[in-house]
Length: 145
Image 1 (cartoon, rainbow, N blue to C red):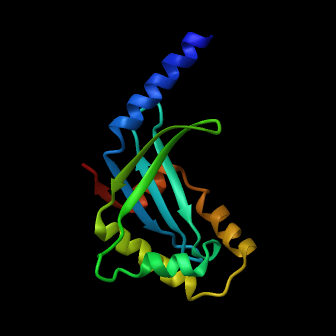
Image 2: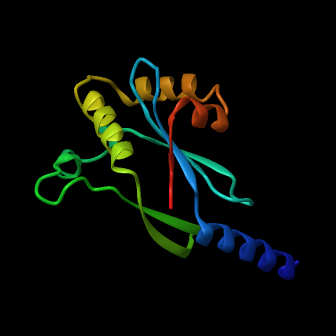
């Protein structure tokens, strides 16, 4: 059993190190626009999705993130491989600046709206009637590396 667990983790670690080669960003067509990222990792990870709700982040942090200032757009993404609650690997990747600009646009739309957590979650429910691959195909696709 332990050997199988080690082999499984080794495969996960190799896929993590190889990383995703394509990803997409989607602004959902729901009443509240939701930023959706979909990353295509090699197996055994496969296609993973993530959403973003700007209202859940402290205002000062969002303002710092959106301020491109002299340093330019912040396009770094920290990817973490967990085994339960244990961090096994961390890597920093650079997303396409155009993809990050799209995220900024969705964030600004969210910040300009008055909605509650329950409203956001209802939109999530509508959005996730689709598969992760359908969401990937609905979004604008980017190459990495």
